[in-house]
Length: 294
Image (tube, rainbow, N blue to C red):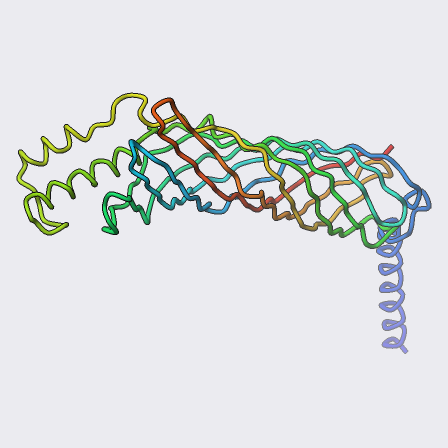
């Protein structure tokens, strides 16, 4: 009988504990009638941004010498700040307008696959350009999100958006014309080897090399300034998890992948020299944010 009494006591304790836990969790899983009503909201998010290495193609003409090169830009981790204005429709869907500013520093710029019309197919050496400073983004998007688990405090969501982004490289610090000067130098040295009937990779006498490079120096202003900004179409997709802290305040964590359409930067000067850079931009956002419903 004591054993039976003991078992009943333990069973009763389990029931009491389970009941207490259920009462504690009930607000999380109990639908809120007000949550199904259409409502406006504002919000703020601050994601950590990781930009993928971006590939670009540079094409230009320097004093009649047509050249091209591929490049890889490497970025450090950056940040993004977004302001939100949206409307919940009461059926899980949200329509949202977002304005944002983002920044990430460029750590490395390497040109590869360099070719020049004057080298007649002879490959040129890669060029690693010292670079530092931020690449900024300023844009706006229209987003559509769908919240699952309507009426619960825990609300997973998925969705995406489309809009425009202006990418600004004016804050990037590097020496303009480094690529063009390297191409001119390598082309001139190759021509000197041909005059001396040396193989393309043969070393030149130092005096000949110095004199060749001195004649190859581009005059100031020979390389046109490259435009620092471009505005393009962009999109993003992602998902996350929201938690309704109160009837008005929702906290959220999410992941978003975003991509900008092909960026294009151009330059031309009075000497007839041109330069054009086309590049891509895509990355990953790990976000924490808050929404306030009215």
